[in-house]
Image 1 (tube, rainbow, N blue to C red):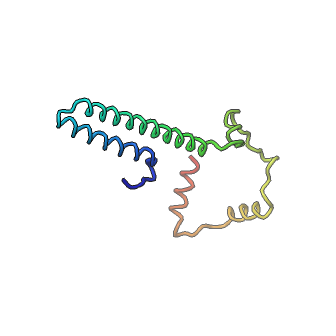
Image 2 (cartoon, rainbow, N blue to C red; image 1 turned 90 degrees about the horizontal axis):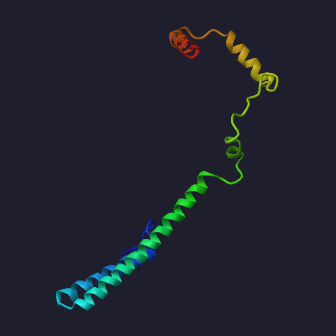
Image 3 (cartoon, rainbow, N blue to C red; image 1 turned 90 degrees about the vertical axis):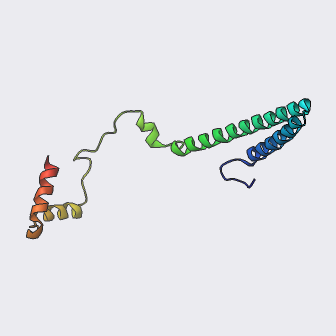
Length: 129
């Protein structure tokens, strides 16, 4: 079996070994050799249990890696998240730069193009609700 980026190589090896043991067990059972058949079945079961354990380890590692990606260490956002709301600055604490204030005041005095008057009026009505 070729290597898979998702399934660890140890899991693939163990499942292949389990398949080989089951084939031996099936051959032994067909030949009415019950003891070798049972031994092969038990060996296959052991390989499958080992593969399952390896798969669980890989799943745990992937889950842990994913949780670290979602929750960065020492993040100020995470520490504030549990403290309630973050106060926004009021007008006295934040004053936009003079150039931005001037542009905003001038744009309010400009006439908008007549061809867009209907859309602009509708837009302004919708945001005023």
